[in-house]
Image 1: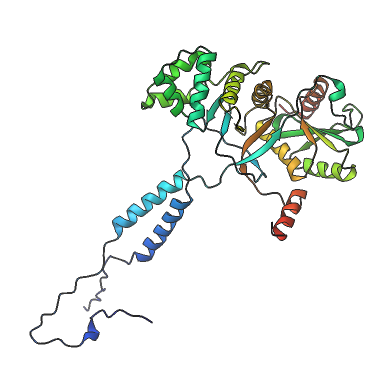
Image 2 (image 1 turned 60 degrees about the vertical axis):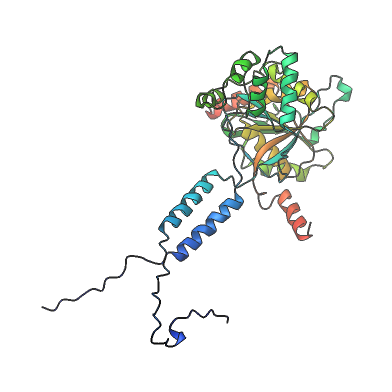
Length: 222
Length: 180
């Protein structure tokens, strides 16, 4: 019986185009990426049509998570140092040099002053510290004078005296309005009325006045 | 076209004593490279943040004690938007929310038409939008309504606290509509 021999192909196939595409995508992501800074609080910001870029320098950010916990952070290590030294004296925190250093390197902080020392005494290298940072109770600010957040803002402003400080408020989609109002109130206690709300970009809906204006700007080459 | 002489078949016969060099295969096993490549792609996809966050301006009015320092709002130009539970929006024109038919309900989809209608029917110098979020509103609602002001290019708007009377009206409306 004549048997049909099937010619066996080598199981290798040419992967070159595959590799080409893979590395093309890889290089795209490497160039497009910007690492997310690790934050102890997860905040999903709402969308807005604003096209203004978020200032990265000279920022004092108050974050509010979905449960209304309030955290503060500052970008500049020098101002962080000034801020914590100010607070250390005005609020009698009794922080050691090591604890001050921990604050300078810490991400967002959201504890009452009474717990600040014990939080900062934790070793930042330990995994348990990361959990402790996640479980911070938030800065109290619910009363009419803005609570302890008032002092944070006051000392942040004095640490930045003379220079313009961008006041950022980053809040979660599902944060209730009273939590946001408390933060605004704390700022108001310090005569601060200009804020930048952190949002995600969104296009202007077609057919609206803003959409028309932007179209005109594009057409006139601005 | 430029070509590189590979010294292959086209090279002609070599002398009798010359040994033909054994040709090694140019194929390289690329599997590990592809593995690594995709590993890196996955890593970068997960760590990347594609859209940069933007900043939205918010100017709050200063508290003024003296009534003569306060901004006066013309009744014909006032439009009050209140944010309630469950993403529901309430609005009224003028000063009196209790006037018959004045206090109305909308959603975030339909409020834009109302804002545009008010903007077109009012003298631009008189138009003032007043935003009053209740304690049941979320931050997203607040940003959305402030965004509507930008979208519709409303020049004068303010965010203020809700009055107890208005909150009462919302409560009644919510109870009637069965919004929990």
